[in-house]
Length: 210
Image (cartoon, rainbow, N blue to C red; front, side, top):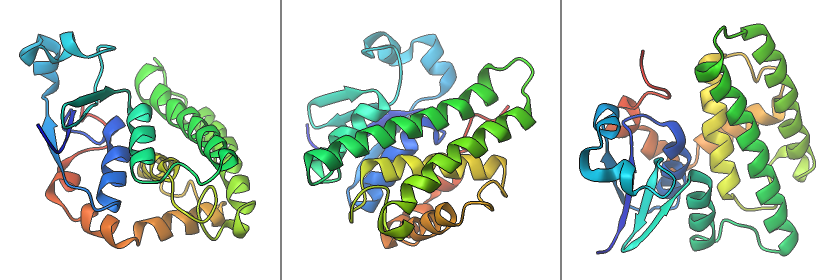
């Protein structure tokens, strides 16, 4: 068996940062889409065989991985997107953990809160975005990436998370010029431009439609 296969639901969700990385690096892969009702019903034994009972699943030939951030780190090492020194590696890992904190706040607000409080979420969001604005300011005055001179797997994770945030609150980056410029730069990368035009990207919602 050869090639990449990404198994996930027909949404962007936890697989989209992986797709952005693969697309930007010029990799080809197969999207193996699983309908949520089939997943719940145990079709194909996917849920039974998943290491932690979750998707996405990533296959590189006969090698199989679960957990989205683990997949990102694996691809980061494979494509040289994990940092060029021990300090950069550690910083990228730290910042990616911070991206996950931001993503989790988004997830909790949309899926776990019985009575979602938009004002509270936006206040917490402003604090989180401020952290990333400061991180960017310390690297070439915000003109490059999160760490160093080269894109990392954490950049793809942040790009996807910011797109989720902007979809919910289109003005949320208005007070953060470095973040605004950052997302514009990433979205102008040639391979990402082409990926955003694909039918798969266009038809997948950020979160399941109610």
